Image (tube, rainbow, N blue to C red; front, side):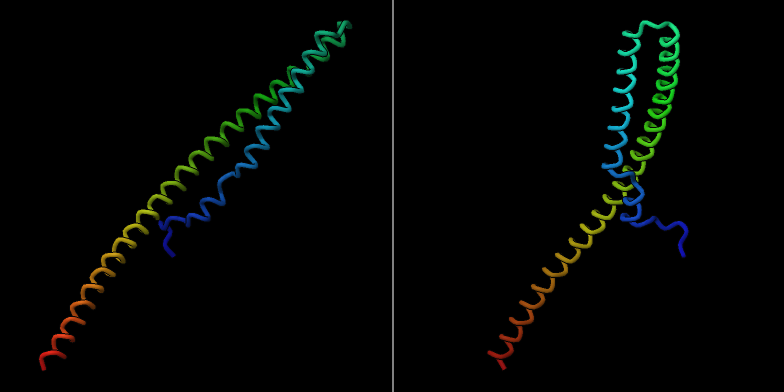
Length: 130
């Protein structure tokens, strides 16, 4: 088993966070932010000082949690970007290798056509001139 072998493109791709997961994560952050905005609007309308302090403390906790979530998401985004870069690099290498193989096959096919044409011509020549 070659420990230095590069993993397959499909296994690399499967490790990358899906775009659906990314969208769901971003939607959740948006909902959390909207909830905080709603709490701030409620705070502005609150007349009871004790209740205002309670709501303000809750908003602070929610904001800290949202900041923590954003930081985690930024880290996950950076990991995803790095994984995509590695996957793309492997894809480009594989495409280049396939392109080289295709070019070799095309060249080989053209040589075979020339060889077959020469062979037919020599057989025809031998048939005409025994």
